[in-house]
Length: 553
Image 1 (spheres, one colour):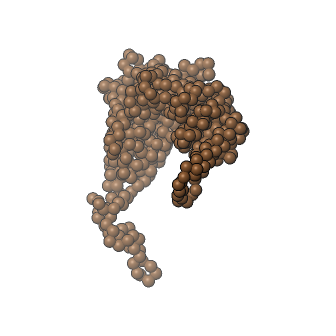
Image 2 (cartoon, helix red, strand yellow):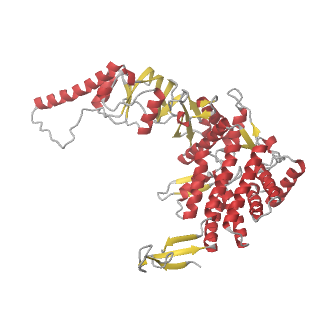
Image 3 (cartoon, one colour):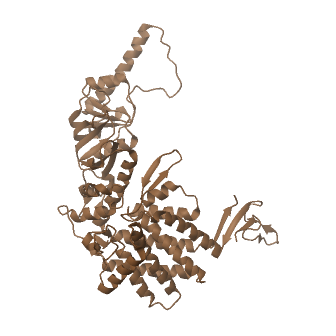
């Protein structure tokens, strides 16, 4: 039973050398404490509830969740990391699982749902062992042993995938596996090709690395998802500052400004009294001279295009057009940085600092109208190869431009594309793959169960529990695909044992074969290993918590 305690009771009352009480917490505070088995069960119940929420979203037949924020903003997705992030959980154990999913997303980019489902299953089986009286530390140690066995087994059954810049089909198939469970799976071939092309354009195949800073993703409501395309350059959601400016500039020399295109203003409050026409004309001429000097600075440096983070006066806009200098204004800070990176420009904070060596270059800068609407974007093409770090190989910046009927579809397409690009990046870093459809988990389950037979200590129970917990992935895939889960799992396990084939899994797409190799369903080895490691680590952390102390509400 949970106990209500005050500050004097909490953790006991310590005494000093004279026997006087020393309170560890403020007197009068009301706390609620759960300890021992009750604390373990409470933590496990919370984790299982969160994992069960994501379970129906696993696999190519998984369902989507609709999440409504406080300001009524809608999100439709089946991405585990996004679901947990938007749920805004405040429970301490739930936050651990949210961080678990975020870590998987940050490190790998895919498998965010599976890692939480697996952690929930491991805790569920750990609860059974706790009821039998097995100490949590012995369970944790057994899980560690089982995780090591599973990872070594995965490395043994992994296959090295061959691909090159000229042979992209293996990478496309890997990206299609990631996209198969997404809202946009109807266009998964198109999206996979875009993901592969975008990554290969910036990949350093000699160093087996990819710099995602060189891939920009932009979107605009309108059009269809299949209108997605890659631009050999950069794109911003802006238009020319003056309708009379040219819509296309060849051999653009670009000045990137973070200073206002206007005369300087005093930092203190001021007031100007204009009581005659002469004073007004003098003031007007002075202001115009400031603008003329600014234009001369630009022309002297050789600039014919200006990207300004701030707005500017109509007078300045008119003078820019008269001097054949195109411009965009109110450019976002992140776009200012991206333009500088893409064109090789240096950001200029003051007009006095403008010089030719700080200008960027693009072969073409053009304004593009989208459809029949008034929406326009600026496209920078023909850019010079750039480096994001001192030791990186120069590469061209590429932009993926996504279209869609509404913002929800576009955001889900953006998340799906990110996952697919992460899969391709991981394959470039480590070309080893294991087959999907739950085949890897089934094979690992058999390997861990066999290893448990050779363990003569209490940890063997934890190894068997780990083996059974791995079955949650194929069971969930079958259940979400409307296939009898227990019978199907038993059949696939028996087939793997009989044939010694490790790539037999769940036929989620009903293609009349359980051979995942034949179906071209596979995952990167790094993703699966990371899932096992992270899930085991967070389960160990939760099992070691034997007391929960919270404020009384």
